[in-house]
Image 1 (tube, one colour):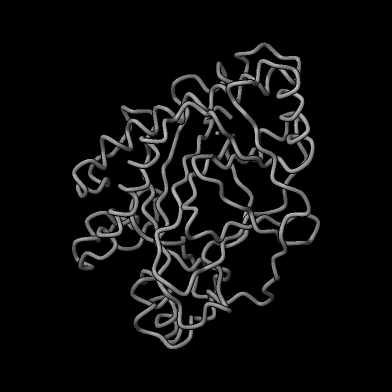
Image 2: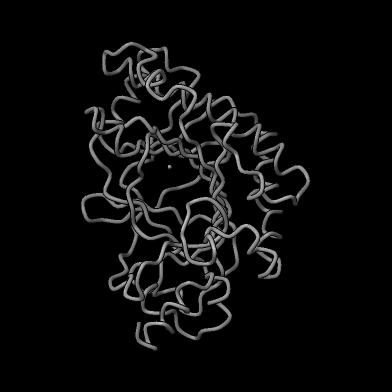
Length: 308
């Protein structure tokens, strides 16, 4: 590998937090060639009352969502406001994790031996070559929460002290929300109510992801999260309403996704759409703020039978 390539690889393998204080311009691997200007959504994002999905009118609303955006806000989802407050508080306190010295965070690194990428742990995007483009301007902590017997607590922060207990309870409640949605989708497709739930069994993988967006010297050139579609079955997002930045692209246009207190943003991911319940949403992207922020907690479920 040429010396210049080695230097480039050294840059992009740093955490974004390190880059933010070391460069005046983001490295080209992070620069977005064309930054779309986001509009407000042409109509309000659908709000689905999960406690009423057995009623025809609410089920019809869910059907309409799946046939259009595949994206909606969920209310009465079974997670108490007090637990959501505790989870958000733990998320905000977990910023202390990102403020720790580099050597301490390395204990949780998503690079094995400093070079072999794994999804779980602390770090940023997978980098294969110095020419990799479209890297996201964020560091994150990616934790497996399901199945419970596959949790790697060595990668879980120990501060705040309540973090593990709160995340455990939140993940358990979100799992119930997932199953309720899957049962409702199955019925809309004239399948047995437990068709999807039985497919994933108790071995479906669930992940919680905490994104940290360091201030960027040129926030107009980067995205906090590169455009993507969601793999797996469902993505359930708990969004910090005071920060914002979630966007969705549809038909070549970019739209801001509004946050609403104590609701969950739900996205029906790619494999679910293969069943014909929904058309594909083009991509999600995340604006990067010029201030430090921990912006979002996402809980996604992946089906490994072949559900994040």
